Image (cartoon, rainbow, N blue to C red; front, side, top):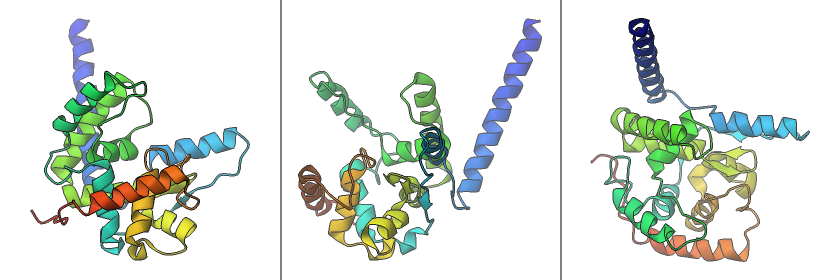
Length: 228
């Protein structure tokens, strides 16, 4: 009996591994048009009796302002180009800071956020965090930094029912991702902790202050070179 159970466990584990590797490899080459978060938000809107709002326009990284790449690195993950998916230095800092903070801060890298956005659901359970770590390793190995950034900037939530940089550029700034200015990119990056609360089209005083901080940090970020 136990031997049969273990056999099935091994089969399930092998299927999970092979299927996730296959999907991850496919996403290395094809656009990610739908994510679990997009579906969850849409279902939530339907349940609440609201109109489903879903703005998403995939664009290649070559058609994005370079300021946008620098802005998210400066605000979200300033060691993005040097770590391998996990920033242990930032994690140590967060653990120490959280001992004295009422509201704990996270230390997720852009790679971890991309893994969560593309493959998983929102939440803080140990199961989800474990799967996030697994997919983080996979996409670092199979995608590389440029592709991770491309998928990240196309899949992040940038407003209520708005996903990706191109969509927020069109909806809020009436332009394209390629034409976003340095200050607009910093403003979009300022919303990322909570894009449904912070509206880059109507920034609060706090957001404008955060935008200014990000612009200053952008000047300290080394030029992004995906060839290394």
